[in-house]
Amino acid sequence: MRQILLVTGLILSIALGAGPAQANPTKQRQTVQKAKSAKKVKVHLKRASLTTPQTRPSFGQIAGLRETRDELDLRSSVAYVIDQDTNEVLLSKNDAAVLPIASITKLMTGLLVSEARLPLDELITITQDDVDTEKGSSSRLKVGTTLTRGELMHLSLMASENRAAHALGRTYPGGLSQFVELMNQRAQQLGMRDTRYAEPTGLSSKNQSSAKDLATLVASAYQDPLLRELSTSASHEVEVGKNTLRYNTTNRLIKNPNWDIGLQKTGYISEAGQCLVMQARIAGRKLIMVFLDSAGKMGRIADAERVRRWVETHHSGRMPQT
Image (cartoon, rainbow, N blue to C red; front, side):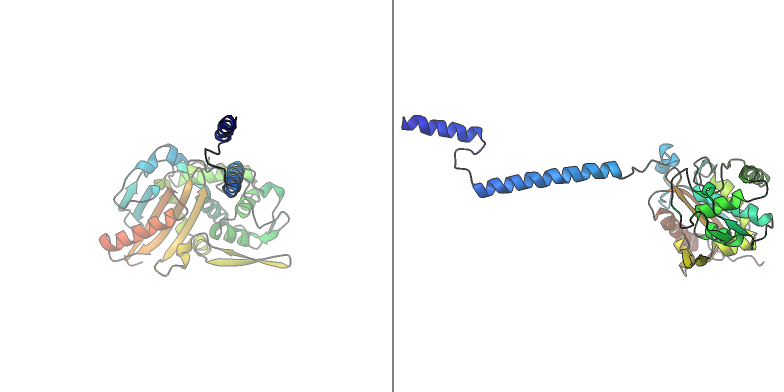
């Protein structure tokens, strides 16, 4: 009878997972606690996956442009560097690819407003129409905020303020639709055959261009002293009611003493990747640089630095007298 009870106890012990030895209460509690912790981690990860937006691949990534190799190992799918005075092409990578250009769009917006000689001291009020419904991006310019056209230009070109850029297009003579039509007309006049604009901010992926076209735009915009001044400003403050809002440039190279930048604009939406266009003096040369669809937040800046060092080493020269 005693043997039967011992065998029965052993069978029950094995069935319960305790094994032949007597179960340790402390180990059992630790096992339960670990299981609970693991369950909590799984729940947390599941919730995070539901609440964290997944980054969509860029158009360049989908097209396989990021697989293109180059001698500088750039992070950008598209790169184009030319001498502004001679039009000599120093670097070219997928320069004919037509891709979304994000807030590089604002260069054309600023160019049109400046060329129209509209009064920069005219007051413009941000309305609900200026709120981003394309990407749902936020803005420090609340509906009802009133600033001058000049201030909106400054925030648009320096800090890439979307509501500011939209308000500039909306209040252009003839309205927003007329403004977008003029953006496309001006692009054609400049010979930008691969460029199309759908709105003035760059939030739409329908705003598309090529590196060659953007180099043409930078060259034209550089001729405008106002665009040079506003796009290369490091910071700017505006008075909104009783508050003072301080804005900073979106291009950290502006504050870098190694750079002499005459005009610049950054851009980003997921479809476009990180983008950057600049006019800069490097190694005695005036260069126009275009980087599109760069991977990573710092990719476009790192690429610009690579190009600067490369030009200083291999393509230095005396700058023509002007």
